[in-house]
Image 1 (tube, rainbow, N blue to C red):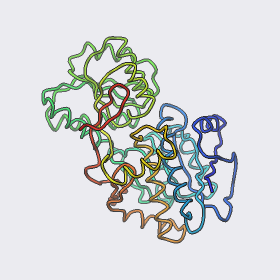
Image 2 (image 1 turned 60 degrees about the vertical axis):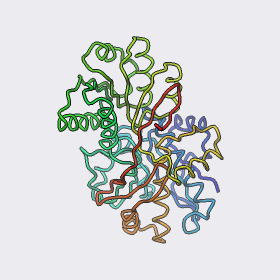
Image 3 (image 1 turned 90 degrees about the vertical axis):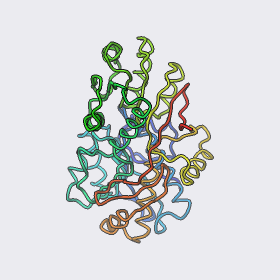
Image 4 (image 1 turned 90 degrees about the horizontal axis):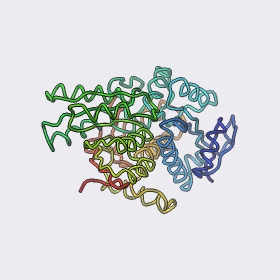
Length: 381
């Protein structure tokens, strides 16, 4: 039985038709007896839409895989997806729509701007949230029923900075970042790292989320005393930066973080030609990563050779949640929470997952350095 998807926005319906997800109904209040509804919050509109798309794809593939193998306690999983828009109020409203339908096991949110207010609003509740974005050290999770499938923003940035300074300890970095929770978390981590290490840095350039004109920041970077550029942004913003940097003759080396790896950025890079190193939560040579990627590409041969990490976080979140449900033999969230919290060295679509007492993924060795060149993402040899 294929999954059905429930959406409340006609814009989202059109988007999902375009990207050819299975099929969905436009309204449903109660699941059939043979169906188990799992909620999902993802950005399907706005600058994080491509990330949300891949998260839903991953969750969809996981649910389909489980359903083909008998489902959970004989029930077929039905994903009920809501667009959280990567913003606080929209995310809270979307979460409430799911909870109002008695759906209390939820995959997401992804964006920090959505995750922080949603988890805060549910503090003290027993609603399960399997968040699919990088966790925020500056705003730690205090809800024991929430779990972060991916590692922390600061961990990903630290690997990138170690790589940069190993190549040249005297490099002065100019930081350009999206001015939202995600970007600010990167700025905080950057400042903490360079302060402790005593590194001299270039200026920092925040810009509004969703910006389509970064020429002012690019011209300032072009003329500042920084040697290289470190950018933390959403995919459309990376694409804008690459295009306008090429047009304005900015030739300084560019480094980035994991959010860069999406097809839309690759397409722009194929035109602009910059070589960009970035850090990425993935263990490419892990057996489970290869196996899940190969299975997905068998069904979707058009998919990129290296699937975006948000595919992996959506996939792993559903698998972990469904596994806990099977182990409990019930939908009791206290039991489900206990089972998920005991996860140690789970091998998934991105790498390994181990949760600490705060629900953070603390598995080591799960971040690698990659390069984007001529429109192709690849792991450094």
